[in-house]
Length: 239
Image (cartoon, rainbow, N blue to C red; front, side):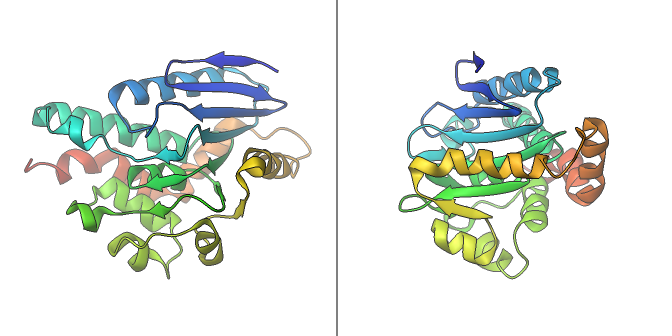
């Protein structure tokens, strides 16, 4: 079993699956975190034998999203640069050229919830942790890219509850309404995510063509990808 590391994000290979671990506490999208995540994704894509990607976290937080306190110390241009990098990372995961599963070990809030939504599938630990888009409580508007991702991935009957009013979901509640595909105890979470990824990979007798899969994802989420490509600067033009 290979074990390859970056400072804030690590990965290891288990069979045909790359397991990525977010390792910096709240896993907020600082420039360093985003750069480390992208480096890991580069390494994974360079390994032709990898057919599935599973992301998970250490500790009790999958991700708390944007580094709002850091933004307060930055100029408008610096904030825009970070937002563009975050959007590019989410777009990359949304169209990643292999099966993707988020194993949510604890809280997934705001941008962290969006990170999980960028994956093909989601599983979540029971007993501890919330899935939530709390922008209304933070008095923050969604950027067009985040809005597009939420609309593309949240069940239509939950978008108002989750996207507008910031409802918090336990794992069981999130599964019941279709935000996640499964939930289980934390000691089985990663195993369940890998099982799900491997099951989907097994549907194909031969390895799928990565470039075709990525293009299919781009086509499937065309409007969301377009918003992710164009939306940040326009939406924040009045910062």
